[in-house]
Length: 224
Image 1 (tube, rainbow, N blue to C red):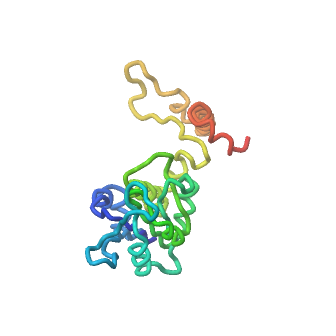
Image 2: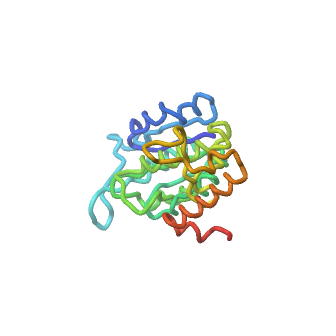
Image 3: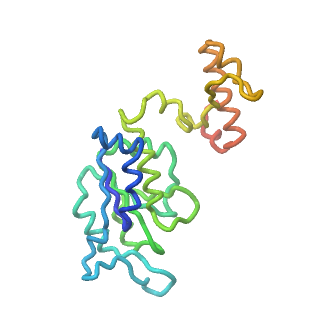
């Protein structure tokens, strides 16, 4: 997979690309990630990328030319273009599972008060990571990139992915490690029993119990 991030702040991504799972995926050539400063695509002599909105209003808007020109340079028939905006579809695990199937993702990070409306016609989809405001799309882009890259075959142990929260629309079951008892707090006996059928049943029951308590909204999409 190839992922291109269009941003005004490429240094924002340096730490993420040089640490942990993302770095290992890059080193193993399972993913290619390019951070592109779309200021370089501004046709203006001073490389300006924003301007005041027609009709008045607070703040500055991103001009459309730098984004159009940047996409002209990198977009192919395999590209899937994502625009990050509060008005987009809320990002969930099933979206991450779908995005991992694309050969080439292009993620556009916004900044300032918003985009020139014409930029939206370039997007195959618009995504929001939640109902809150960020100063720019960089944090959202990193969240999407991380959640997608870890699903690429070979990046993470497949068994670990199967047992994670949201895979079956349930939160993950509680887990424990050694010691079996600490300060009077004991690991449930069933986990020490060696009975794998009982352990599977216990874990599913705990998933349902936890999801019902903490995220009852998720239960609406689960078959009885």
